Length: 124
Length: 108
Image (cartoon, rainbow over all chains, first blue to last red; front, top):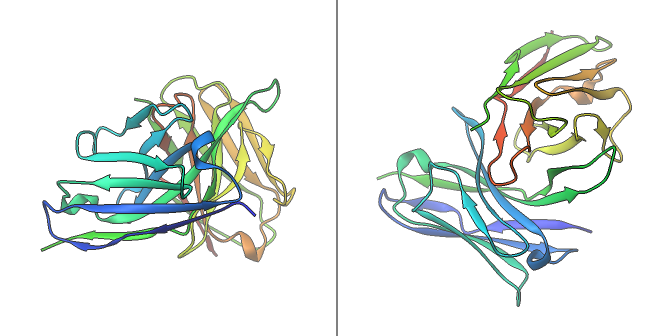
């Protein structure tokens, strides 16, 4: 069964750092596109970052220069290092696998599955 | 960046009603549009990919249509399990992704 389990969330002061982990089972993180998405009550779902199978990384403007996505083959885990945290980074953070489908009728890309989410609260 | 405008933000409906949610992209995204369902306290779940491809296990009362800039999600006959929040997502640019604001489907 394909599954993602996040951990590492918690309460952190503004300006602090936190590292989120996402343990995958049923597939290999290193050979897939993987992403982080966050959700706040006020702003809904917001894409945060993506890492391509080849290792390229991209970030939303709101986190560029502060967050870093990475992966570790040995333990099949995706990470999100979050530095210089701000109150507006408070959210539930989800880890997702990115499906890239190539074909004629149903080509596209989407997020599936999603982890259960981990809560990050940035507050003094 | 591509902007996604989803409407309505909420709606009230009864079991058996036909429900339609609309999503509009700020530029043409071909058929790179996905729909997710989220229930309270749970992660979103993929319902429809590439505008109209129903995922395995998703009931056939759900359907998606559209291409270019205008898309719809339709529930042909609303069931008790369908009361949830629905999000559209564009996937035109694999380096940046945008979600709609969400539509909460509530009991009338």
